[in-house]
Length: 612
Image (cartoon, rainbow, N blue to C red; front, side, top):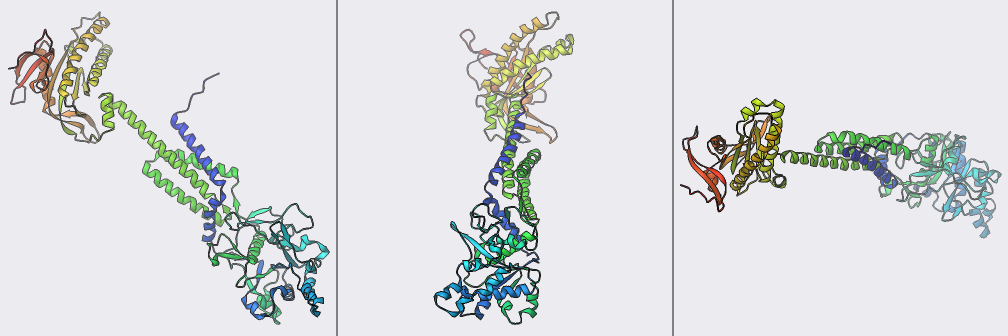
């Protein structure tokens, strides 16, 4: 069985970000009331009313009440009958009464021995018996409130399911009505099962069979449906009134719209003010019109939402990491705004685009991509640290990373010690060995030499052919830079002697000269940093100190010790065993340089040479 090759860490992180983004969006979608904040705003923003051509509200308004000041609403059954009959005579298809007739005025009059008790409700009963007047039923607590028996007995064939519609519209948890329940299952089979809007809509579309629950697609804000005051239907000239004639072919809902009415409901158009509430009759009218138009707000299915979140996250994780961090933030801000615009456009098309779940997915992707950028920056820093670590010791790298040491183009002025280390008779070695062997010889030596310099806290500036240039005390300042440089030089000399044995064994067939090194050291001011141009930059040291150290290395051929250090260098160190002192006139310098052969550290057998 073959082993499974693990994916790169970055790819695994991208997969994890995608999964977390989808999970976050699906989790937010489990709390639809959060996204309803956006959806309600979209509905309010598109507040222009649709042309409602099938439903008219006949309003019992203040003007109508004023015409019958001595008649309580409980005794209005003859007036409702006259208004309903006038609407039907004008050509209305059906009339719905949005007043709960749970008390019969006729029965109350009978208790008062009134002569009117015999036939007071008769006009309304006759209208109910025609099958053209729909009565309301309302669920209150655990009891379904039905019309009073005096009216129920007038229902054709005593079938309440065909003439009584339920008007209760339960609000969501926040008190806002957003859904229409079209039918109820179970219970008494003879009880009303259909919502009043569906009962009315089937008078125009008998085959209408919507789902049990619909998200309401509104015709517009409160006041969007055509409205006719009820007193115009009760007038003697109602038949000739053009407004009444327009009821032909319509569904008419008779309901209250007067001051003090309790039948007001909060919809997405509401903002808590009185103007934002919608009356019960208009709720019935708008939902009836919605059914007739075969509309409803259509949300994404859970699988559709998951698919969208997955696609969105994959695209974001694919493209965002390619952008700089500042553009990632801008891109995400623009995407969050575009999701709001998408939700608005979807709402106008009777669709529910899940803005908040989508935004949650974007935010998770944003955090994940920022994490990827941070991880990439850390990786680059690690790579830079590893690269720089080839030139300086890990301790210096760590200090540079965690300090404010400037490494800008142009460098900085420091006091340091410069070392040049060169191989003796390298030209003869290169002449006698194939190029591949020369490379092998140099690599073996530089592996040892750079380790010595770095362990002493120095910086390997560059390798020039067979020569090595290093600085001590830069870029990280060391007060004892001269001592570090001398210590490294002595260790390089020991390393060269040890490597000489390796060279003799490796190239025993060749007549190679002895493997030896020459070292020059000088302390003084120099500029170290990134020197060059914007296209080509070297990290190096510049100054007279560098030139003097290079000249001293060349003079080391004349000293058996192989190490020559300037007086400026050795004067900073106690306990050195020094050899011959020389006054060196260097080409290009007006003043001679006093230098010493460095033999090692003082011991009982090697007393310090007196300095002139």
